[in-house]
Image (cartoon, rainbow, N blue to C red; front, side):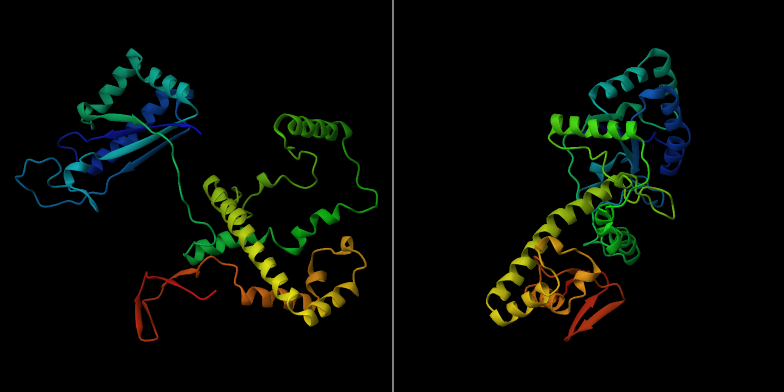
Amino acid sequence: MGYSVIVFAYRKPGTTPEQFKAHSEGSHVPLIREIAGPTFPLSHTRRYLHRTEKQTSTNTVSNANTPATVLIGSQAEFDYDSFAELTFEDESACQAFFGVMQQPGNAARIAADEEKFLDRARLTAVVLGDTTETRRNTLNTIDPTEHARRRKVLNTCFTDNSVMLDQHDSTTEWSAYMELGENLDYLVFDIMGDLSFGSSFNMKDPGVNPLKAQNSTTGRPAYTGDELRAEATLLIIAGSDTTTASLASIFWYLSRDPSRYKKLMHELQQTFEMAEDVISGPKLMGYTYLRASIDEGMRLVPPEPCEPPREVLSSSLNTMNDHYPKGTIVGTVP
């Protein structure tokens, strides 16, 4: 889960916010990275408060001429100029990092640099506890460009070609040669994973490891870690519930309409002798009455918990004598 520390920094009196940031990024952080070496955090994220310049004032209050853009609270509560989140693998890694920082020679170099831009007497740090995060997924992403990017990645998982990949490997013909030693290694690794953790690593499964998926344009991973978790939540939770609701409604309506139930059964039985013969793909969905039954069931009972949210993107929206300004979130009919 990682071990994180937040450091709050205040700029030296007489130093502007721009000078503070420039020295921090151009000198101080590179110095810390150099001294820390392999003990440098897994991530070191700096965030700087947004401040506005005011005309010179005789007020002696700190930041009287450079107030923060406060939404809730008072200026006095936001007197610091930046905070940095340092994330380590574990507590021992954090201790190793600060141990290196506190070595006499290193501490002297760091202090000399901090004197140039920091109010060292006010420097504070605290350890973070549990972290939870809610991120946008394809369903609730409003920006058209970002939604199109996410949708493009998801669509590759649901094409006919992707769905048929497992059937392609069930051929009775001879396959290309394979490295026996390598595949036996995969087999044993899967067996040990099953015995140790109750789940196989799927090392011997055919195809490219999905964890290696990359954006064909940039060459980078198709999803960041946060995006992958957000999309997984969408597919597992929203996907399972909507599929359950759709199937339940379709079966409910068919069970109460014998004539249409028989018509659908006749169409399927004319084509498939056994249930095992039913193969997902474009051929199956080419049966008009089956497709019509599915579409009608979803029309009668839309499998959504609420109306899908949409944001007014144009200058405004006028409908049924109601005015909705740009940026308004409205619900739409499923």
